[in-house]
Length: 291
Length: 316
Image (cartoon, rainbow over all chains, first blue to last red; front, side, top):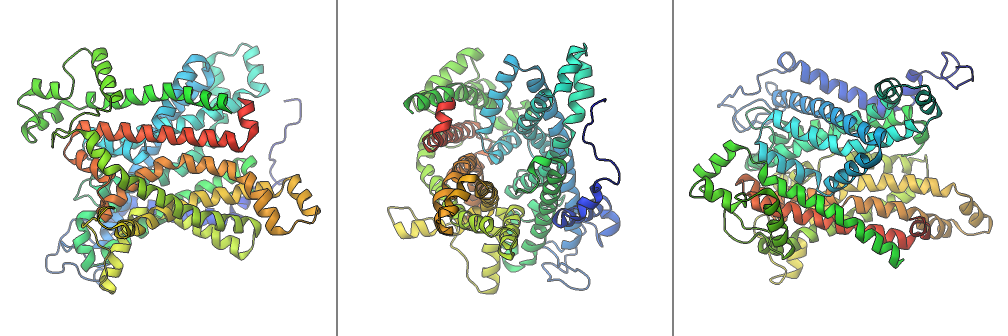
């Protein structure tokens, strides 16, 4: 490191925290997301009732002191179900994204790093895959696997792996074009060392951005699947499932049933999108100031 | 230009082939216990051999693919296990509903996104800009099916008014009534998708407004309207058109949900029925049809892209 390379030195430039304060929406998003994660993790302790605790004598009751957000058609507490619903969304969000990024990194690395015929073939496959609407692909795979939380995570992971591999490949190609990568190769570094020491650490930023942005997308698709009746089956509360068409008859009499799961869902997606936006601005200087 | 269009057209062939392989693979991925269920509960065949024959699984794989692809090229998309009707006929009957909904939704998105995006860019960092950006963020975060559910539920509870759901009118019966049924679903789908296009429009306009030729146009004494519309917008439109073209699958996907909520007999409700009945030939047919539709709409975008920007067709 003889040449001077611009690095952030403590004190000489604003720290990441100082810059985070300059992104109020991102901060707001992070707070919303953190709150939902806390609800999801501690649902048993935070929720006033269990999610399937039914009180047949207080069915479809409007919000009250005993049930802050009212009760549903079986007399279950809506607030508790919304809180437990956070768990499904977060499990699917984190699980689906983790699985998806793992697959996407493997495919994107192979495609971008080795290039050649493998790259051409992989990219044509991704092209073809992108011709199918996301929701239709997810529905079709769910039609094969059958409903269930694990199957939703598996399906969304698979879909993400293919789609995101394109982004990862782009990032790998960008890193590969750097002089230091060429130098490492000239010095005789093995493929393993090249990938492990030079490529992977340098695509970390796009990975983090993809992860946050995708959490929002994955939560939305899970909700849409459950809404349509092909996602996480009852009695387990999922926000999409709580809004599902099967409950429409009851929602017409008790509109609070239609309100809160959607509010929670929007808040979670908003949080993930805003954190993703802010991270992209902070980690990817080329995009700073746009969007 | 003809050369460029031809080149694009040729590139479609490998994509079509791969898409057909994906669709072909669907029935081959049916788990064994599901096959048992299809026989016992749904009575889709006399026995396993009969069902395999119906699904076209009774010969060597390569032969299966060639037979299937040959039939598809002749317009035969297979037969429903549930109704025994050819899937192509049902798709033909239902496609007008889906395409009407998709096009109307795109129109809604553009009507909202373009003016708001342009104004936000021209008045960057003003209150109007912040309001427009907040709107876009809200549109991105609110799920379209929730918006649609609220539109059905809230007016019915408070004002005793509900959109008519379930008694669909055909175009020939009542043209005005036909289009009227699409207003609410197209608004829900269009507005929630407008966020993406609005942000893109704003971003592109900001970039273009900083260019030298825009400054030159201003220096020549052109008014702000002329600069924005004639010089900036025309150049910003190219990537915007691409984004809209790339959004086609989203509109098709979104129309599955909207058709479900508003009881529209389109391809979305068709495929949902097929999925709940595990009617795999229909699932295959809809997947193939939609993917081919997307391929050709992408092709159209590519070609118009080349027509809009001479640099692209020469760079190829």
